[in-house]
Length: 526
Image (cartoon, rainbow, N blue to C red; front, top):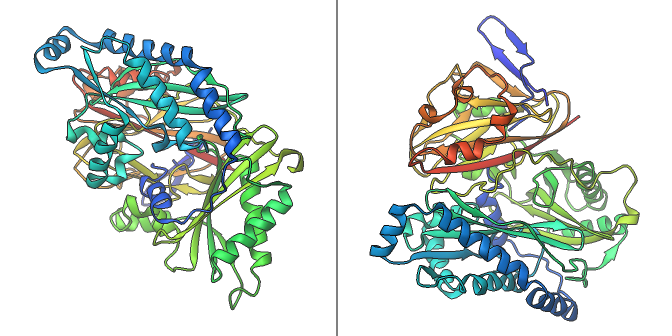
């Protein structure tokens, strides 16, 4: 993507078409936690027989897959173990390994009992390997640890379990799973991560053959028009005094990307809200606006007046009858499942689930985003440093050409920050530090904004449209002396693609480093 950096001097504004920096943190840990902790959910019951069949399928048909993944994890852990590690393990006791619950960060609407059965199957396979060398936590053990963690720092729990538990010092290795949609079921894989944020092992991706459409089949399937009408009616019944909606985007599954279909859903739903809501409030009726914090307001406050953890609350307005709309949808074969979430600045709100027939979706809309996984790592957000990133439109923001993006970052400890921007045209540039501001050090819990006050440019979206990424690394030591020359330059020039594709590995291989990596998608529309 070719976005614009606008360089500003006291005399004039000069536009350099250097790179497509749309608006570039966290699908907000707080926002995510708020939804589940404080929002009454509208949940549709699953069909008991269908769910039981899927659970039995997971228990009986994929033993080989879980044994294979267990072998891959143990082999990777042992391969990465140094002589010093083995010696310490001999004198200090067995390495403590825990499987982080899949349901803690599930990106697909799968029942908790089913994801637990997969974690249990993996643990059972792991227990076959040299139990004298490893101490495996059971689910009960880990639940105790999670309860302790929740009392410590709930904001880090889901997005970065390592940062949440590292000070607890009760585990040495966390095994974290990932579930992705796939025809005929889901793709499941696990990574073994140490407490320094390093990846010890990554399993291959295994197909778990389940019928997702059958799970929760009691959710009524209907045409697009009927689904949107009913969703609007349900919402207005639950929030009768609704006055304003700020839209933040409807994104595809785990990607954080809004497609043309997601944009259509957002527009169709809010149109129906406005039509059905006439008379619910006095005055001009229900207003629909895009969620945004003005970039100039952030610059004038130096980012201090808008705390990163409060961004979604600010985006939701300042009244109880104003709500922030976001959502997710999943392709389930014949159907598309849609989850719409509305919450106000207090975190109060509602979640609506609906399912629409694919045949009723207007032609020309794209359900699946165009994927470019060349720079997708397997350690996004996991590490001992609680690095948080967001924008003036929240996490995984959506912008139009010509609009401006401002990034907000902070950490739970002092750290050095390095950020890159992956454009949709395949080019990657180092966004921070840069030649205008070469100091990458930030203090504990001190928020910074990008571009910084020392950088006389702004991030403004330009053509072509598409999906882009911001990738930031937080390290406990200055990484520059250990980076390739191509990464130490601060001239806002494209980085060779071979090096850009190895960024995660390059930072993780810095000697004795503690590192956390966070990736955020940016959708740019016309």
